[in-house]
Figure 1: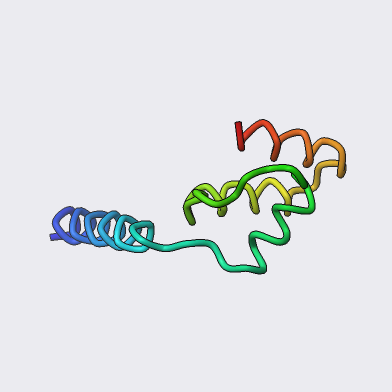
Figure 2: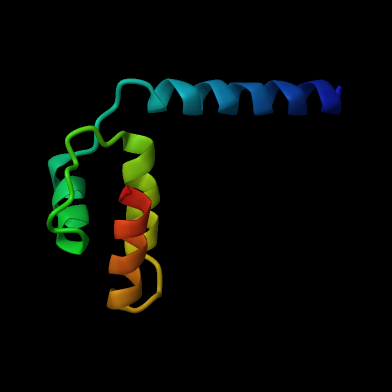
Length: 76
């Protein structure tokens, strides 16, 4: 019983994540924040998943220079 419930919860979580990632675009505020770390980057085709990865880097405890480097590297 516990195993079946655990499998069902994992499946639901996977489908929910996939549904949220499809068709979503990052907000204007998120794009602005990312643009601060990569001013010349073209963010027109950025997916919400990639934006979330970049925002995780930006919100990390690294130095500002390290964050900017990582953001620019991920955008390549």
